[in-house]
Length: 152
Image (tube, rainbow, N blue to C red; front, side):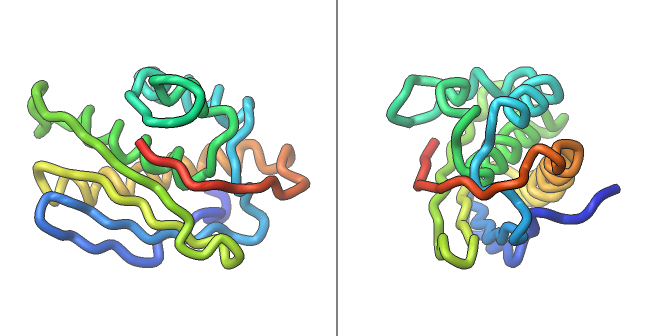
């Protein structure tokens, strides 16, 4: 296992909503690229089809090659919850991601949940999967790219 390029600083469980505060390491890219998007879509085939409110289109695929890394984590958390055995087929998930302090590379992700234990496990597993993908492609990330707010 590689280093943690992205880490959770704090998780707050509210009524039906999980707030996750994350920090990117100085060497972590702020934005996704085509390579990271392909890796994520390969591991999580439903990811590109998530509904996503953005400027480019109706799905996460519209932005997944150029979106803040915490926004990808938001969708991974949702994907993990969706695929959990304790999640009913009719349950739908929504989330938002925003930079809390872009200069210090801190972001806040919020996702809804139906089962707090499923949500906490989803956040942990999604973070591990994203760190694995980031480490696999670390050699591709020599320069830092810009960032913006994203919602889904």
